[in-house]
Length: 91
View 1: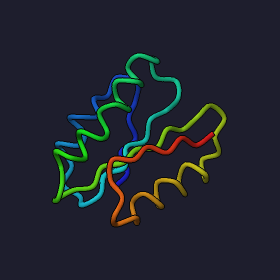
View 2: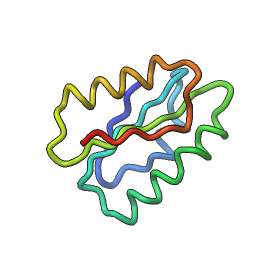
View 3: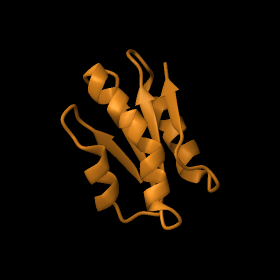
View 4: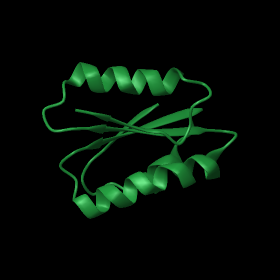
């Protein structure tokens, strides 16, 4: 399940509210750098907290990144059944 987060959205709340087996958070690169660092650091602990019921991964859409490249990264993480707690940056 793809969850695209706006600048002020809380990734912890988004993961905890999700009901899907796989959650892929998508962060835009225009987030505040301190908040982005905090959010990226939370992916691993969220994956541990959610296991074994849910897998949690993230994609960071870099400035100027192509939408189809971001979509491909989301699909990859969503379908990678043994992958959780990972972050992919799409440049």
